[in-house]
Image (cartoon, rainbow, N blue to C red; front, side, top):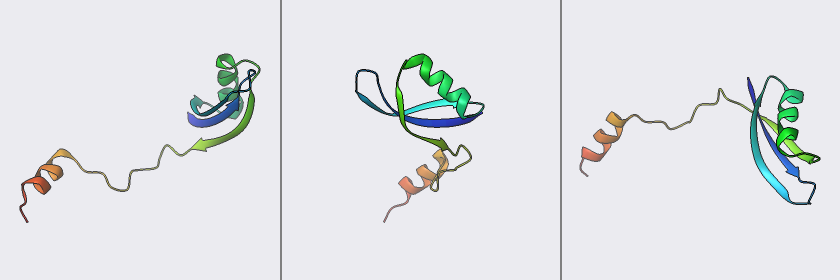
Length: 71
């Protein structure tokens, strides 16, 4: 499943940013969005890359090693 990030304007005129919804494709995600925000206007959307890895990740052992090393 893909993940989509929407920005919408509600029927009351409020702006809501960064609503993240999973869907098979854009129409599926938009259908789910419109179930929560009826009569909203989608101002922006983007697909979120789920395969992106954090550039600096560390496990607990690496952190403990860094902490225990003295300068």
